[in-house]
Length: 351
Ligand SMILES: C[S@@+](CC[C@H](N)C(=O)[O-])C[C@H]1O[C@@H](n2cnc3c(N)ncnc32)[C@H](O)[C@@H]1O
Image (cartoon, rainbow, N blue to C red):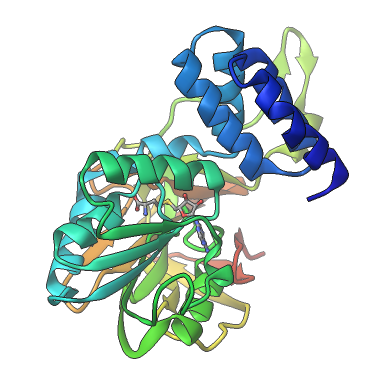
């Protein structure tokens, strides 16, 4: 413990009934680099205040820092939840030991416990791990689910898990599939934390792409505003835009193509890759390439958030807009490039 953290800790008994003083110390703990202690204090203040008043709101500010809003969205995606639960039900045998990477609300860990497994689930964010423990206790699964507040690569298979897992399950895939670090986390877990004949859910993920027309009724870039030309600002636009799936925001202008497919059940490190594809158009204006994800859950289960499927998804698709729209006839080919750097994906139209 550094001096500063020791000094702050020494103050705590004197202010244990004072939420404002406790939250002030929590903020100092963050400044001193001890987020786990700050989170514990913020939880204490939340319990004292019920989230009310300045101290309660400051506690919420600390607890929610870095907690993405999609945590409140993904558990509502019934198709996603069911795809995972069905795969867990097919894989889990009595006495099975499941390791989950990425607890979040605890939903998948509780599904595995409900199916009969003993579960260790790890969570990199201390506030999320602590809230998940409360969720799991409230649902009566604390005796079957252990939440370890660690990044998966810091797990010790003996100390934290009591031995290698029979099943590894995770939902750490982002809209672009890779940027939440699924490749590195799985390669490490398969090598160190999973029994040699262990099962991985999902065992495979694919980045799918298609030529696309933007159906949203708005200019994609800045132009004239109040008599001024703002177009020079457009170079600051991100190269891809989130597209909500199942909302008719884009039309696919080609058949879908698998760009890159990844084995999540291997310990072999995947190298970065780059490729070019000639994609035949279905005709008409093309604004860019849209990218989405497909997950194989096991030999029979599959989840895909194809943008024009008519079914909403917690995962968005990404539209990589071309510098200018391209007008095409049916069967004209458009050459697009794609690359990934293991935790980042990039798409472009070739000249
Ligand atoms: C998308 S949420 C999934 C939550 C829950 N498993 C579900 O599917 O409903 C992913 C969670 O995993 C955590 N996470 C991501 N990578 C991790 C890793 N390698 N080790 C531990 N936690 C991780 C994130 O902090 C986040 O809370």
